[in-house]
Length: 404
Ligand SMILES: *Cc1c(COP(=O)(O)O)cnc(C)c1O
Image (cartoon, rainbow, N blue to C red):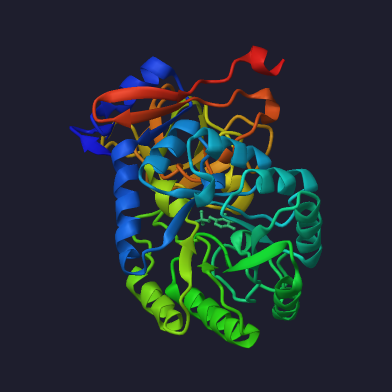
């Protein structure tokens, strides 16, 4: 994705051409970028030979899941809907893990029937419920227990999940009790310790801390885990001068603890696989000026891309066509929704924009479309996959009749 002669391209296709053909707002993904990310991820962790389960909540588009599956990745799902979707995408049950703090009996039962790799439980009561269902079905079910390692991921507070005040996982004490409990049960087979301390992590130190806790607790439990599921959370650069995660140091820290055990590593990356593969193309509806700043009112809104409103996350916005004529005043990029949080970013130095101009909202492949909603009865945008010069509609724009 880059500029060629001042115009923005997704692989071989001009963004303005896509906007004309499919209208805006419009999600658009690059196949090449996806392939590159998966290749890089595998390469970074090659020496561990891990099982890689794509975190489907980052992007649940069926075509993208099929493509991801073709590269050999499995899936990490958090609901019956996601589990159904990845099975439909052709991902094998033996490559699927089921995470989440509140899986219902119906969801657990469905997952048992599908014979997936692991159900990662997050509380004592969930373990008991899983055992009850397994007993009813006369089955032995493979499970993991998610540990809350009480480690600060040093990321946005709203996407931190590994501190003791977070709802996720179980404490060390409960973890050790559950290991003992599982050892005695005839119906549950404890295979995995899982952790996931948060998302958009750019510093390897929280991972090192988490690994120390994992190491200590495995030693204490004196239990042989077939799998250690380290979750996802690997951050990506959302702006030019951003730090990047030091994968070498993360791998080094993992290897240090793995010396003691023969466990297989599982990763559940979402953002690092899909985040930078997608852009949201949007058109300026109005430029609303006051003396100090102008509101650039886009046709994309918080219902299309929720991250800025939900987490205070920032996505770079760039012009579709570069002119090098600067606006000379502050631009505030907003959507049309009746909420003050429906705001993407503020820029003190942007090129002059006029009505009908196109802009590109960057790095929206993860938690973009998957977090979209119909708030204000706005239609969800379509998704396009670009492969070289070819474009493929992988999700159609919703129609009013779908909603009303
Ligand atoms: C969200 C989530 C992931 C993926 O996180 P990323 O930051 O997108 O890599 C992995 N595992 C679990 C349990 C999650 O909740």
